[in-house]
Length: 491
Image (cartoon, rainbow, N blue to C red; front, top):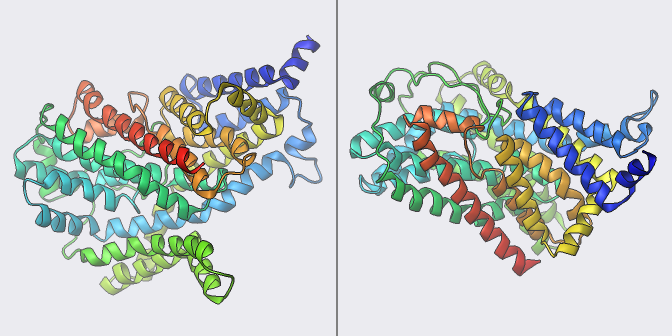
């Protein structure tokens, strides 16, 4: 018995077996037992640490001092990086959503593209509005506008819905301040500016292939009418209700604003220029700091760019601008804005716990030597790290449905491998994009978002598989292909 235990703890095959068992147990308790991912990750991480023979003092510390333990450093390190960013991003999305910015963007885009180009307009609407607004809230806000466009165009609802969904999914998977990319920034220690840049570079081709090309093809073949009750809701009255679930499966852990059963109609939405400028402010500031670090010498200008381009500061500036321009200047009181902030932040707690538990799991992977064993095996097989990251993320996504769990678990496994190599920030950002791409592949019946989309867009299970499932797979594969080619060139 002791020889088997020694083999599991000290040999490369044994460590890989331990890792495989841990992931299998994790999937079992999430899928079969329906345990909350935060609790499941914590239990499996502690179990793996004990099974691998790590000292208790290293895992949880002592009764007197626990600050240096894997448990606390695993949680604390990542939460210190992402909590402020995700919180501010959530508030920014809430004020933009409540102000009526989506209606303003829709009117402008439909005016530019006309009736024939309405599907493209819907895609760009999802792409732009999806930057500050989380996926499920985006569906809730934009679906009525898609219904109106489909009714006016007289064609299948699928033709207009798929481009919009592709835009929302792309921004949610690849761009900060969405939880997945922000978590990967902390787990892989990569600058968010590079994540933004590589997110656009890898995600836009996927959006075009999945949303515009595939959406146009399948929208002419799967005919879905706009239901009368949805049309009535879109033309006036309330927008209905929506359950808060993670668009990538399971209980909602992706952040976002609170969903209410009724919202007053916005009479005078803000201008498109105002909305676009507010969305652009944090992106420009973060990218300015990133490129300033590369192009400028040490000095006052670089210090200014670095301060204002720190993601937390950049988002705080955008939130304050939004509060004034979209709130106070339009008649909202500070108390109303405070209430909106509190409502929007309520769903964020579970997300942070899931990401923290995933980071702890990754710390255990590193401390046990499993990361080194994976690196050795990968090197012997000639498998590039970016391919390994994509495969692991895909497998976890398909098995249990949640993109959040797929991202934080894969990031924890791959993080030590990335840290052991001398990769540039661009190369690490591309690895992060491969993980993000894998986390959205093959959305099916174990994904909460699958059912939300089927309900909102009046589709059967078969139609949702034909449209949404294929769209997510195309978006995943194309975006990963771009990341893989660029990684081969850069790394």
